[in-house]
Image (tube, rainbow, N blue to C red; front, side):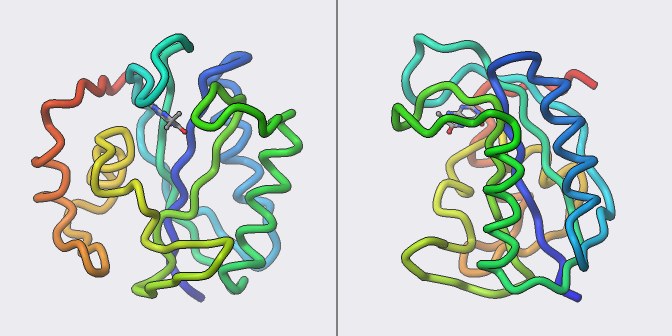
Length: 159
Ligand code: ROI
């Protein structure tokens, strides 16, 4: 089993409900166990501003699935939430990002791990630091330092 981290985000159609339901669906993926989840965090949209604020969280799972099989499962869950892939960086009912897959570095057409946005996004770093404060991110270093470098971005822990 590999320990992997999933970034969860939503800013449409009751974001809190979308995220809590997504956590249950992560737990139901085959060969996969949900170990722990972060609090929920609210932040202004990164990218285009004319969209609602986001809720974000991070989940830790253990999985026997290969990375691209896990990615297929995440995209299936996004699709189940009525995710329509239209505008780049537009609003979404559910976004599931494979942030980390063990200590592996993956560069494939469909999948880059660590997730390329990870080091610049406080809405990912803060929940990740909450559940794994001593994490070392492959190629990027200590989560504590990455998170401290993004402290200028406003992210509010809501529950
Ligand atoms: N902004 C915030 N605050 N949270 C997100 O999850 C998020 N996801 C995105 C973009 C549009 C980049 N902005 C975001 O995909």
